[in-house]
Image 1 (cartoon, rainbow, N blue to C red):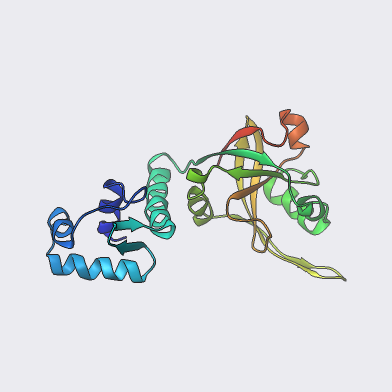
Image 2 (cartoon, rainbow, N blue to C red):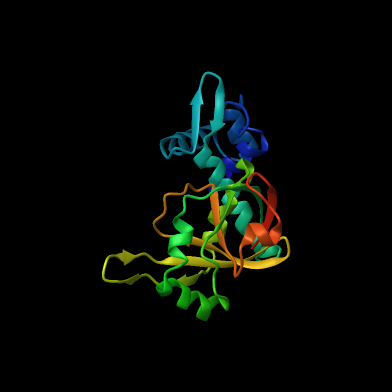
Length: 208
């Protein structure tokens, strides 16, 4: 992690361009202007920031890099806990199909301790919460192995225990999925929407 990214974040460069010269950045970071200039150039080439006449601004990649470090450190300090906020959204129907397959169900019963309802609760994370997802998948997963049947091959799943509104479930991360990074897929031993009395668009918090 380059400390210039953290310095720029503190200066608000994730929200709007920061008007600082490399000499000023170097002075703030305790380095020479030449070193600050070289590192800013390297960060721009790595896609971490953009620099133009308006100033220096972190890209989404740069912000996520800093935010991911923060999340990892916070998780260690807080005992490994993460909390996500988002809204329930309608899925693509894939969860119902995959969670009905005995190749997955058997492993989930053995490794997570419950028989999954044939479907997933899909949570679209708030935009400022999405960077936490990387910290989740950086943790050691419960692995649900892929398998083959006579028709096709099914991929591996990573699972992470979680709680939603006081109910125990597990976030699943398929290694192959049509969902974007903003979606959390959660399995439970029951119909989640019925049990939680929630509809699409309802807000929920997920603790993992």
